[in-house]
Image (cartoon, rainbow, N blue to C red; front, side, top):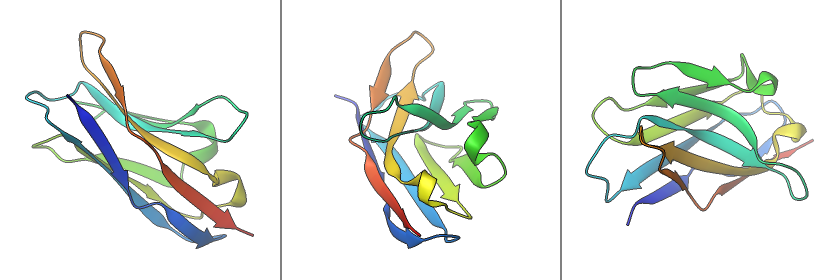
Length: 116
């Protein structure tokens, strides 16, 4: 069964940086799209950043210019570099992966907390 495992979350002060990682295991193919979403309790899960297998990226409006998504060329591992973190970035960050035929997978999430 496909597993997505996130790491790198934690507590950081306003203006600080963190890098999240997500690795997919038990996957005999390359995902078409991989990315990050985040969720605050009581709110909808929102897009942070996604990257297609050919390198196209899409960012949520609130993170443009501060966050950067990257992906290893040879496998199913992605990163999210988060700079100039703000208290509003506090959320549970989820890794997401999707195949070209519509199958979708989620990780368990990693908590990011930004103190003011």
